Length: 433
Picture (cartoon, rainbow, N blue to C red):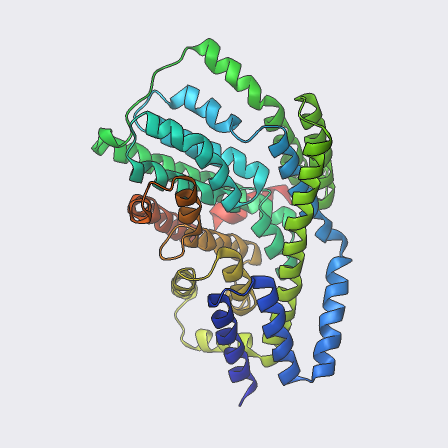
């Protein structure tokens, strides 16, 4: 068996064990270790696994991950989970589809705290869905908007997925964050435009709620000033060069701790809960990163990435058609792989192909995460859909998936725009470099 076939067999084995339900980190370590054992030797594979684990855990730049996670959990403890939705609902809730638009705004704001799609959709759904149902919204329309809006948490900085990609691909995390700003904002805008269009065609989907006066609007606006300033200071300081990513995460964690204290939510229990959740999440992600590096090493040793790159290049499809083909493959894989598994499987295989075509690794990171986000909502996996169904158990899965369809079409249009106009991704990093 040629090395390339060994690499392909490893990819297939990884897909099989993931489909069987093995945790992604363990699956990557197992398949990567076995593959290196076959290609090199058991002793070499064991030594490589130990070195990878040690080097990963001792990398200074990896400290950005637990610090941003801690910032998010301290903001949760401070009670910032529903503030963004509440403010948006007071400003636009009186318009047709206004609460759905508010849920998109809430997801965008909360995504800038959590960096996670699943955390975003779970939190905003628990706040927004009861309000939309009370206002008479169509269950399919309401849950579709929430499932789609939740994907913003995976892209808007500080995105956990972009941090992991930056570490695996050895790309600047600060540049990735800058590159994600315009795609994240345009993605939210596309969702809002879809909501406005649907409610104009069929107003019964999202009836307007009662208008509130400016005094109440401004009173609620005060609730997000502190968290808004914290996000602006941390992400803005990173963009303009005041902080490195790790320093920005450190400043954010301290700022979130002060915010929690200022709101009167800081006590022994809340702090212990935030620390425990941070350690649990970080430990899981560290295992995933170690496994991803080990698996990527196996793919490199087999020469599979180089073989695929050469095969694709020899087809002479051109950059755009090749990227469209890669996107189609990723969307198919996203039907049964969760987002992180998809990203970690795809990076060592498709990143060399994109770079061979002259694509920026920064652009590819945004493209990959954006494609990964679509997997959070399209059937049959659609993890965001299952999170919503777990919260609203009386709404059938098929109803939620039906509500997703217009937003899924919007996602595909937005992905096509990012492929056709790379400057949407690359302009801001070139300005803040």
